[in-house]
Structure formats: C-alpha cells, structure tokens
Length: 293
Image 1 (cartoon, helix red, strand yellow):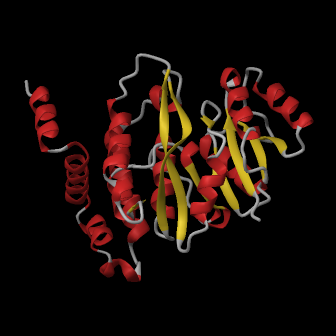
Image 2: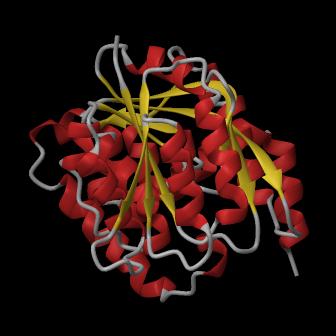
C-alpha cells in the first residue's frame, strides 16, 4: 500500500476551494494526506482550509512564515518539503478531481521506469476565453499520444511544447521533485519547466481518461500574467540547453540531441508533426488559410 501526498496551492480562490477539497475527500483511494498551502490569501481561503483540517486528520494547512504572497514555486516547494509520502499529486485550488483520479493514476505510476503520470482533463470554461489552444492540446493527446503503445509523451516533445495540460493532472515522485530547479524561465511556465526536468528521469505516462476538471477563467494566473516574451524565450533556450549539456546519453536520443543543438528547428518540426497527426492535413491547411491576410 502506498500513501499519496496531495499538494494544493491556494491563493484567493475561496470561491472554488471547497469544490477542490471535496473532490479529494471523495476519492475512492483513501490513503492520502492533503496539504493546503496558502500563499498569502486575502479572502476566506485560510478559514475554509482550517475548517476542513479540523474535520479530517488527513488534511493539513501550511502558510509561509511571513504570511505574504511568495508565488507558485515557493508555495509548491513548501508543500513538497512537508510532504510525508513518496508519491505526490498536485491539485490547483480552482480545479477538481473525479473520484477515481488517485487510484487510476497510482496504478500507472507503479509501472517500472516511470517519472510521472498525467491524465487528460475535462475543460470547465467559465468565461469568454479563447480555448482553441487548450482544445488543441486535448486533441493531440487523444488522437496521437493515446494511440501509442504504451501511451506516453517523449521527453524531447516536452522540450518543444507542453503536452501536460495542468498541475492538477500530474502524479509523480517526491524525491524527483526535490531534485528539480524551480527557477522557471517564465513564472507561468513553471509546470512545463518541471515536466521537462522530470522527463529526463523516466517515462511520462498518459492516462486517456478525464480524471481532472480543469477550470478556465479570466482570473487564472496565466490569463493575467504579462512578461517580456522575447527575454523569456531566450531564457528558455539557455536553460534548456544547460539542462541537457553534459548528459552522456544525449547522443543515443536523437530527439534530445536535436533539442540541444537545433532548438528552434526541433520545436518547429515537433509542433508541426504533432499538429498534422492530431488534426489531419486538410484541417491544418484550412486553419492556415484562415490566418492569411
């Protein structure tokens, strides 16, 4: 029997927090602890979390010592360092799980040479956000990745594009997380940066079941973030090359070798190939035609 530490970072999502925590309590797999890690919330998030902790001994509430906002990376690390178990699952405060989410992913994680497991999400759209990008990820997962034997994403593909939709879809190993660098080239891209690193330790296995309810809304971090895109792109390239430099097995993996020495070309080829496989030639051509001036 393996116990699971669930890390739930929380920042001003009191209106969603109950649904997230209730979905954990409803899991068919009961051997877990839930760490609700508050990142300096100004709403009722802490009191809601503490009420759950009073009712269920498996739930703990953590806060930064100074009680202020430190950002997602520091908040995740606080939870991971306090986690009691070797298996870690993430759940964002504005998302929720289906009842068998832990049980199904844990079974997949226990396969040999596995670095992480993730599942396809079910989109919950609460605004007028443009969601074609997110729908495109799901289409690629179901039309391409799910058909592989076994279903999994390759490390070099994660270097080119993020095919793991959300923290709330991921289960992994605590020791691997503690070995990662959390200084992401772009703050909203912390998930992609972690998955790239974890992919070098083993397989990134895909479960083609909608085990996560992934909420898209205008108040999400990625929707409100404004950074220097050109600077962050350069930093991504530099840090990815540093990540891959000096790896003895690089020459045995053509995809990672191409990522290291021809990052722009590699990214274009991978993105284009996945899009063609997922949508078909005619759909890609129609989309390109619509973008013409």
